[in-house]
Image (tube, rainbow, N blue to C red; front, side, top):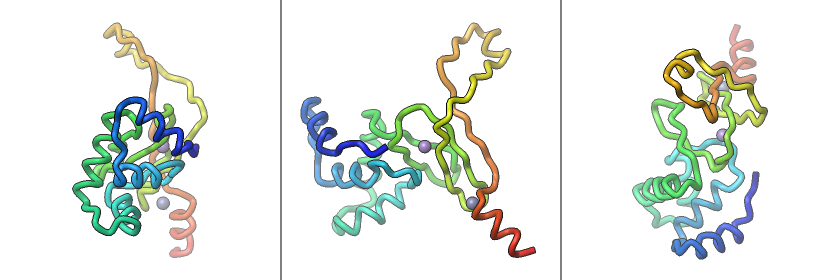
Length: 145
Ligand code: ZN
Ligand code: MN
């Protein structure tokens, strides 16, 4: 979902948070972005507009945005963290070949494990990750056979 950047800027100002050019550029890039980009992806994209921006700045900004709850950090890919501007609870499809991550918006029933019940743990949400091979990688595979 594409949020209104202008609204976001107002929101930030109301909360007394300064929006630097860097922060704004990163927010703009992430707004409505469903590709779950890594810090490297974001750096490459933002650098086109701000050639002076360093990777460290991008990384630090992502960390700030994450702490403020504006983006989610996905630790699905063990090689590199990926970022998701969609902070609503949702699930993911992960291609084990090309590492593409797609969203699933559907509500999935929460299966509460017996261990949670035994622990007296109250489940309030879940996030499910489905691993597999995406249609793109599958068709490539089929061509090679
Ligand atoms: Zn794939
Ligand atoms: Mn997502």
